[in-house]
Amino acid sequence: MNAGTFFLSLLAVVLALAVVLGLAWVAIRLLRRWNDHVQGGGGDGNDPPIRFLRAMAVGQRERLTLVEVRGEVMLVGVTAGGISLLARWPDGPMPDIATTPGRIFP
Image (cartoon, rainbow, N blue to C red; front, top):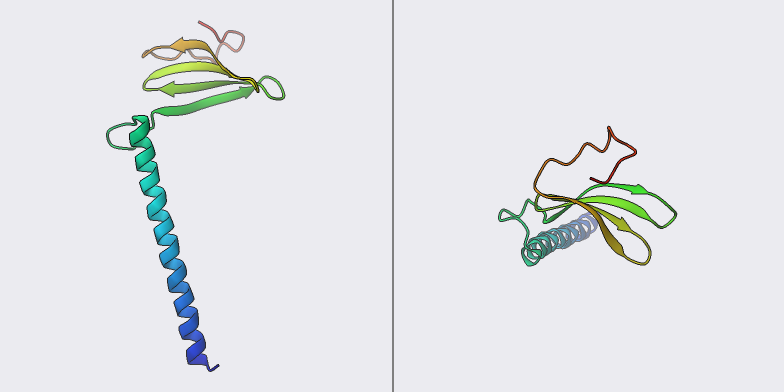
C-alpha cells in the first residue's frame, strides 16, 4: 500500500467519523427538544420545567433536595423507598436558608 492510498483511506475514516458524530449530535438535540415539548417545557426550549437547586445528604441513602417547578420552590425528601414533599414556597422569594441553618421549614 503506497502513501496516497493510505491517506485516502485515513481521510475516508475521518469523514465517516465526522458524519456519525454529526448525526449523533443532531439526534441528541432533537431528542432534547422532543422531551421538553412532551414534559411541557418553556416556549423557547431553554427553560426546563424542573430545575435542580440544591441537595444535602442526611444519611447514607437519604437526602433533602430543593427543586424549582415553574417558579415554585419545593423541598423534597428523597429516600430509597420514595420521595416526599416537605415544604413549598409558591411564586414568592425563597427564604434565605443559608442565614438560618437550623430552620428549614416555614
